[in-house]
Amino acid sequence: MLRKWFCALLILALCLPAVWAAGGDDILGLWYNQEKDAKIEVVRCGDRYCGKISWMKNPDYPADSTEGKPGTPKLDHNNPDPAMRRNTRLGLEIVKNMAYAGENKWDDGQVYDPNNGKTYSAKFTLIDPDNLDLRGYIGISLFGRTSHWSRKPWG
Image (cartoon, rainbow, N blue to C red):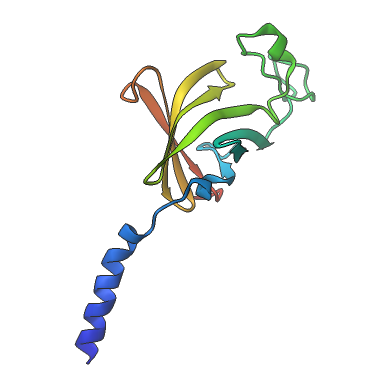
């Protein structure tokens, strides 16, 4: 009898990863970036998904800053559009137009990097409910970089 229970539990444990599958809205919510110095809130934008910076560990320029006036909010000073350079980084939309592609994947979107002012093609892969990989790339995804996002600051 014990052997039957053990076999049943083993089969169940092996099948669970195959059973878990994300729906399009499973990506919604707050995500820490890889460096854990910002949170990005992913929301629905019509039938697509977008994300904005909702929290920053250091939202203001430090006392020794050469990029902006110390104590004032950090700006999107690397934006290629001069009119956008006055926008604060906090609240900045950095993920745009992501489409749910099925099988725990979102693609056909863009990610904006305020550190260099560049926009890249992007796709998401939901590893599990609390871990997400963001791939930013130029042209094809082979030429890019993956950043790991987590719902938890230590994950």
